[in-house]
Length: 79
Length: 219
Image (cartoon, rainbow over all chains, first blue to last red; front, side, top):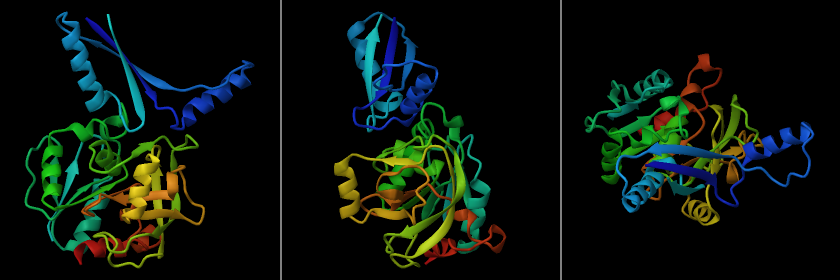
């Protein structure tokens, strides 16, 4: 089983990197961009196929290491 | 006074810190590798600066989860003193020993220069030889020192006098909220700061502004 985790900055937390990327896209001629937010993406290969157990384990991993919940939110998808 | 420093792979500022601590304590500093599960008998634990684990994931994130952290937490719970400088501050925050987060510098650049710090709390173990409002010059060298905390946490820090150092005279190099350069926990026995006071204590450093900070430890 594979877990795919998206970690993004919480709403309200400034993202200077996203802002710089937005500026760069603008200088490349892309228009109509309202905002860019940068995040992280993880793929974790898991043994076994108990989805509920995997979800619990992934949530624990996100809380303890993959995300800094002071500033980041996370989303878990299992496949 | 007994001191120990924690060494993680990728830290590189430990030699300067050891020298600064030995100068004031007059005793040798114990070095503790990050895989240790017990600390030697010590009054103060210092986590120096550098780039533990190459700043992978988030600065200080991996080091904060290494085996020695349980021993550091136990030391702090008993009232033992802990000081984290630069990456050491990031590690203490990632470990949950200090509140908030240290984000990428607002201007996205690594900053290596001198800033001015004002002493905001002169009763901490690292500032007792100084007076509130005193200003010192001090070098910074970091990419992720932009202090962030939610409004409620910031208010608590301010109300409890947990802001120990603030960037002064418009020298905030990283966009930190409230110009925060260093804070303590509520109890005051854990202090973290982004600037490098260990590099402003000898005539060879150009100035000795930060010597009283280290003298405070020995007081």
